[in-house]
Image 1 (cartoon, helix red, strand yellow):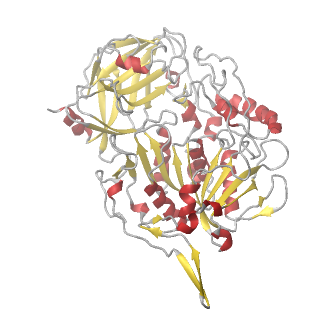
Image 2 (cartoon, one colour):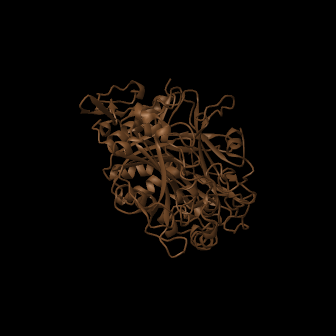
Length: 620
């Protein structure tokens, strides 16, 4: 057990008290001794057991679990396709083991990336885009193997690995809803079956039942991206038996995935994607059910709910917000995310981490400095599942709450911290001084009467180009003095922008950058610190847009994405304000003018050491 830990302690150097459990049970019958394999543990981690390693002896079979819903309109409850991989000792020796469960809409293939699959983003704000293409998915995959993911990692360590296809995908019945209630209830049903509470069937439409007699009734879930979202979805149901989850870069609110503070915004790398696009992308279920599913789900529920016109938060999005629906969660949470993930952004993991801590659920978070994906080191995952699935008292709940990979470290060597954000961080407020078309100032002291400055919207200039430009009318840039010492940012920056627009609607984009921009051999952490977007029409309410009156000033306040980064000496921190973001927002015609009142605009920055830490970074 870790007795004490601080921010300089590396995972690779942690000393743990050993916990051992007998690996084998011996039975004597006269002169013959029979050895039975069993899980073994050392230093609080499940060890690879030689008797479980032989994949040729693994038992692999599939089945269907009946749910409580009918989303494909056939008048029968939908059944989910489930595949099991387990050591042969669960049959020959009647060994019972806990479960690592992975569910996904991707296992049976996805739609081709045809022209017109994504929404056309080249139109005025508030206008309706032209209709897009609806490609069909060609289903792939064979029985009984839904997926081979995770089996070589966990089966030899004394777990059974279970996979299922989510509703309306693969050989699972139903319809995909992209965050709808059935996508939470489907894995719940599988867990209920694993715990012996409901029936499983040998065929998709038969009555011959199958039971999980080899299950201990202790289930853990993991996965990345959508596959990481489904463990969160299942956990929000409060299902008994789901003891622990390790979601990796999960969506915890589909609103936050496709919108930002009232603004229609695409996930990074998928310009023009929205809920209905993802629906088409994953809809690999039975071809005969697709017309009904398309009409009922995509062309009615999703079309009427997602609202690409205003971007407002509504009941459709609330249903797809797992943080709002987390009151029933009980599963111990180990969260994993990359600070430079601009697909599923870090607010998803942080907001759920914060919520579960408030609820008193055992919670840890692992952050690395890379992009989308990236599981925690096996040591962290192993200790988590060992504690909550095998019941080994390894003290993991007393370990550091946060593990962060520092900028120059390997992903396998995170630094331990008491929590995230760093408890030693506190907010400082930085104010603007004039000169933003070139480079104005960003200071802790507020200079009065700095006036107003204008930028012109033109999406054809990328954020990178705008940040690099020595002078530009298409953005406003404000920078700190050059750092003479490193500065550590930890937490969620926030901006308040007082602005007026020449039109009734405008995009608002914010980048926090490290300058000078490093081109040659740049690391992912070198240039962009964090980002954020907002619709000024939602300055008062996330649920109701109000058209802007030309020339009238509005105060817009919103969070940027959470971060933890050490900015090196010699750099300057820059606050860049611009309108349309070529990589993320809609692309209206160029020419909208945003006038920024510098006296009413500020940046709140969480700095380790607070104002002393900031001033120390500027001291010779």
